[in-house]
Amino acid sequence: MEFDVFIEYLISGIPDAVTFVIGHSTLKDALSILVSSLQFQKCNLDVMMQLFEFVSVRLMEESSKNSSMFSSQ
Image (tube, rainbow, N blue to C red; front, top):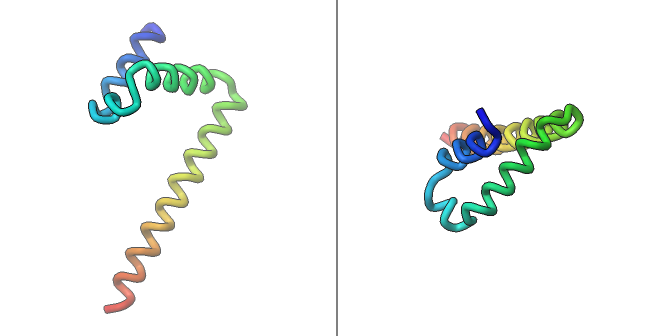
């Protein structure tokens, strides 16, 4: 798959409202930079670690909300 076709495929998975607000060209540029940076091992590791940290924090926040909701009953 060619790079531009891949980027357009990724954009097609983003809701139209987001694409409208941010703009197609801005999304295309941002995704191009992200995908290009993943080709470098050090950047790839850094991005994946940041995503892991983000997901972990969100899971901990949701877990604390749910546990406090059940403990008050």
